[in-house]
Length: 134
Image (cartoon, rainbow, N blue to C red; front, side):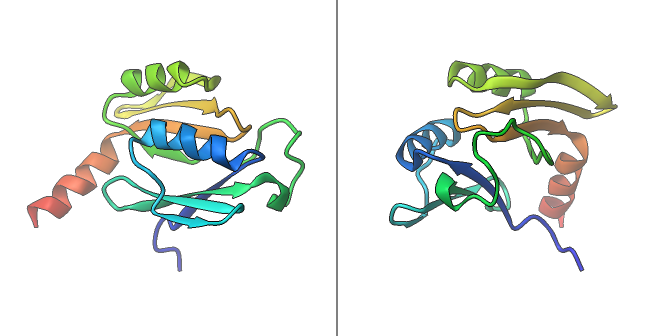
């Protein structure tokens, strides 16, 4: 039934500011845009979709505190990623936390109120290596 990550969706009142911030964070521009409403980036080894939706289209109150699920994006160097998020103005939501051998997370609130999770995940690297070996 579930085959994998399709799209992570975040919301932002100022879509142009979000576009600039995420372009800087990800190091690439969006590959798809809907005028004044939606932008989408392709991220990582499997080109997962990160969509930013205009805040007025959100199904919840954008002024509410961050909450809900945290999608963790794999990074090879968690400390460098934490430093980059902080340098770009994201606020720590959950500090760097060891979850088990080979699994370490941290999360931030972006300038638009979305929770953005980071994770060093050894399993992710093992799956990627196995795919590359076959």
